[in-house]
Image 1 (cartoon, one colour):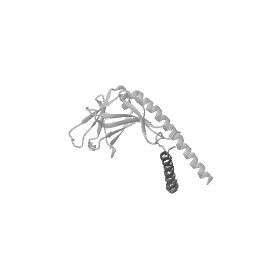
Image 2 (spheres, helix red, strand yellow):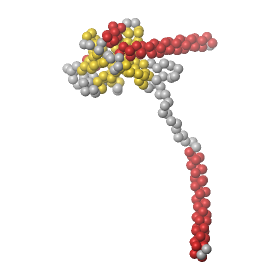
Image 3 (tube, one colour):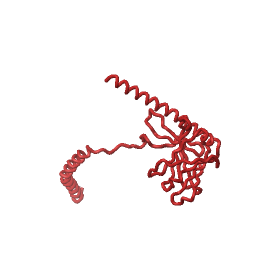
Image 4 (cartoon, one colour):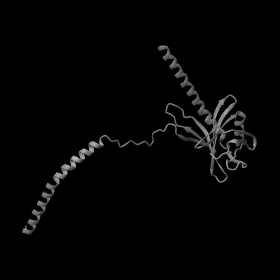
Length: 229
């Protein structure tokens, strides 16, 4: 081995040792800093994924029947989700204007309950009108408004529901606030209504039975608690 190569090797080795020696205080300091950082991070949470977790109260589409959707509200696992029929109403240019939802009620004269949600710029005193295939038109008042729109709540008789089943198109008519002399007509397709209403009626019958059972159970527990006092 030549002197030059031997010197170079010794120089490199010395440099390596020097570098290692110089780095030791910094390594120790880094380790101490890491320990302090780890200690500080010990009280922090990185969070847990929430994707896929149930969001009770949220709305989802169970299935579709013709031009109708069956929309349900997510409830805890031990309960049956309540559902209704839903259709988005659009104008002639397919712009969304109003919403029509309906569910079976079966309370005396009222066979079904429906809600029509219109824009806030609707003339409330003009009310809304509902007709099926241009016949048997009836007028309904608005009940209340929210930031999402104005709501008209309709009680439909068995004859009304039967006309929906037999008809082709229902028409919801309303008056814009800015044009009180104009009547806006929105078509409600009745394609798929019969099958959709039957499914919703079946689901809601179960939810009502569960609600009644829960109410009776709560009443019995309350009475039992009173007896033990």
